[in-house]
Structures are given as C-alpha cells and as structure tokens.
Length: 440
Image (cartoon, rainbow, N blue to C red):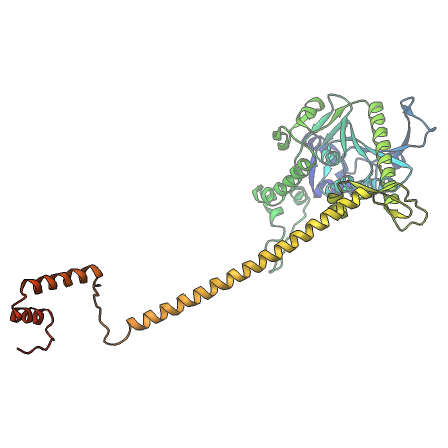
C-alpha cells in the first residue's frame, strides 16, 4: 500500500482528470489506514489463446498462439500490492512473447484511464519495437497514458462505439499535506546548500500557488513529448483532440485515433490473420536468405537467378534483369556475348576519339599561351617607349602616289609654258626645293 501511495502523491500523471478526482476518497482512506487491499496477482498475468480459424473461437487444437495481456486500472511503473502489474513487468512480458517462437502475435487489452509519466515512455518504446504483430484492444477505456501505449501498437480496435478514447495530456497530482501536519504540531525546516539555491524551487512555488514555472519547465515539455509520440504513428485529422478531450470510439475513428470498432471475437480472428501473415513473411525471408547464401555447400544453385544489382553495367549491356545459373556457374548465350562484344568495341572507339580530342585541345591551349605571351611582351615594349625621356608626339601625314603625279604634271606644264625663260624656271625650282644649289 505504501508503494502505491508514494506513486500517487509524488509524480506527474498521464491520466484522465475525472478518474483522478474520483480517486480522492481512496487516497484519504489510504492515508488514514482505513483501506486494505486484497487481490490475486495470478489473475493479472497474461493469458495465451490458441485461435481456431475454422470455428472462430479459442481452442487448444491448433498450434498458433496469441498472447493477451490485460492492462486495467491506473498504470504505475512498479507492480501494485493489490495485483495489477506495473509497466516494467508488462514490458518484460511483451519482450518475452516477442522472442517466444510459439507465440504469433500479442494483444494488449486496455481498460485504463492512464497512469504515471514514469514508466510510460519506456513501455511505449518496447511496444513500438515489438517485431511481431501487436494490437491494442480497447475494452472500455484507453485514456492518457493508456492511449500513449495504444498508439504504439500496429493497430487499435475499440470494442464498442461508446468506448472512451483520448485525454492526450499531462497533469500533476499535487496534495499539500504540510498544513495538516502543522496542525499536529510538526514544524518543517527546509535548508538548502549555498551552492543549491534553486533546489526544490518549483515545489515551493507550487505550495505558494505559483504554477507557471512548473507548467513551463515540466508539464509543457511532457505534453509536447506526448503529442510527438502520437503524431509519429497516427494520422490525426483534428488536432484539437491533442488538447486533452475524451471522445467516444466512433468519433475517435473519424479523427484517426483508432482503426476499427469490432468485437473481441472479430479482433481475435483479425490478429490471428496478422500472425499468419507475419509467419509467412519470416518464412519467405529465411528462404530467400538461404538461396542467396553461397557458403552453404548443401544449397543447390540450379536455375537460381542471380541478382544483377551489383552488375548494373553488365545487365544494361546484356539487356537482362538477371542471369540463370547452374551448379557449374553462369552460362551466356551467343546473342548476349555479341551484345557485350559490341559494347566493348564501341567503348574502345570512343576512348580513341577522346584521346585525339584531348591531344588537339592540348595543342590549341599551347598556341593560346604562346599568343598571350607575345601580346604581353609587345605591351611591355610599347610601355617602355612611351616612358622614354624626351619623347614627343608627332603627326605623320602620308603622301600618296596621286599627289606625286599631280606635282610632276604641274612642273612639266610650267617648263613648257616658260620654255625660253631660264631664269623663271630656276626661280620656280628654288621655291619648290629651297636646298637646291643653283648658279646664275
């Protein structure tokens, strides 16, 4: 009883608030030692049902077994004295059945308002990582922590349309017993180390009615975790359900919280089918692995197709998806060999052409480099001339041949016109050629 009381009073809860308030009388009775528990832990242990597919009922005449684990009442991390198993024990059961070759699938049969934050995430991860099919069957209620666990199953089935689902959220169960003890004369002294001024700060603020920091630092992050877990496995069409509402199964199905509404017998049949499909998939996988293993001397390779994933180029050239093999190896048809030969020949031609192009490109690059060097040298020479001392600019006018002919014609005309006047001719020549030395 003391273990239950500690779990109730000390921690945060993923639990439906309606149930939390209704449990107040139980807590008071426990505190006053007016309540005792009687229970049989054996009745809470999981059962293994063997399903008869032909009759649609449980039977001991077939080999496929389905483990059923009842999860009822408030969930706690450790086992309760009155019998219900804690989440640690439930997790161990699930791992044991997942490894048991005689068990084909697991059903978690829920009728729970939720439970403590402690233990929920660990158990949820165990359910998520279960290799075998694992199904949540909501008998009457799966709220808060119970829904967290359900959301990690492969499928969620509600027993009736009015089964209650949801309450996705977190709350703190907080009872300040200090005033009651003080009335009995108990004096409380809280002494913190000088190095630990913030120790128990949130709790002291709760006692003073200051809840904001605790919600910000503790409750809100826990609620964010809850939302993330649910959204990672379920497609929710109305995210207002994440604010903590509880809905009936028919609405829960519409929102995406559950998959089906079905009776226990229908669910058992469905899970049996899932177990059979899982067993077949494992058997097929083992067969494929045996065939692909070349280290087993007893394994026959006759007519076993070779996976061409590692030989993509060969498969492309041969235009095949796979090669048939025998114990002696792989045999290629002549047509396939011709395709491979043509591909190799084409590759050789392309390689030669690429080498020619590469050589031409290198020669062209050398020419470009030589030209660039010549240009650079000329630019340097021009700069040196421009920078030389005493250099001046000059204008050069080019005399054309036409101008020369016209000058010669004018001289001839002048000589003809002054044929008897030697002095005039000499005078004209001296004007044209000032440096000409003449004697008169």
